[in-house]
Length: 79
Length: 406
Image (cartoon, rainbow over all chains, first blue to last red):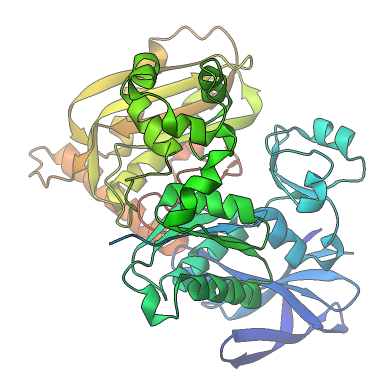
């Protein structure tokens, strides 16, 4: 299910993974990132976007981080 | 010096990526499909293969064979990014890497393997890095040339490693059915079978005169293949292309002339933009048309001068279209520019030419910064961009590196 909404995220920066979402808030609820199942990057012009497929143990989400706008989005979810 | 070539082949690549991304798909029969209504299976998981599901089948055929198969719409951006990252792993071990396709690469480690503990150590290291970084598996084949390296990886699949040393090649090929060898398909197998040649060993021993009589100059090449020999070098540096082209299969057949012209404009822009980005110009424009019954034809025209200008490509393609009486709706259109040369910087004599060039440069600059089609021709404003398929010619870098959307 496609969503595409801006969200608040607590992320960790470090090596070798560079950036990892740890927790996010959506619709007033707090979600814990239990596992990052996959990550990839896309480019739109000069903008690089990091994508993360994550699960909280029950639901699969796709989060994205735009390195130019510094915004996180919840792109889609799968129950 | 005997060469040492590695073939790294990802196991059920797209399906493996999807199963890794979504834990609920792991261990289940899944098939990756496209987004449009006209879609076939691009790849399937090993669990689905057990039911006889094959690449190229449509969803109905697959469902018949495996009623509980799960279809997953492919995420091309995930796969192309992963492929680009895989190249970085390969380049740790040798600069001589050929990205043969999105899920297969050849590495020449002849002069570097001793730095890493040998070719097997390299193979296992690559497998481990891929598994650690992406959670997916690959198979490594090691051999004195790419033909046998590919065979080694095919034999060892999935998640395997096989080294066929020079002294073992003959024994491996002796009883091997012809169709197992890279480059020999079912038609060639049938033709060779008519001469009683059923195995690679038999092919390697077949008289050259017999093979040359039947297959011409190809006959000699077939014999050397049967002997396990292959001189094909790795294409490490990208060769200049012979043409630059794009084609689209439409979700619904096009009947409206305006729609057809708008799609040709879009294709011309895609071709022109790619040619300009890599500094190529061309003189021949080809238009490809496919009808709903799959009858496909192409027509070509030669321009008075070399160009990479969208409008010149578009005008040529349109002139070809105007010379055709379409007998049916259109299922697919393609535009390509060929007879390519590296761009020649001409002094443009006319104001109109200079303005057109400046306009194209501006459009390219804006689209480079903000993304493809952010600045587009007005006639294309109302069209919806169809999803793109990863072409077999796709490469992780260079002119064949095309951004494929979902």
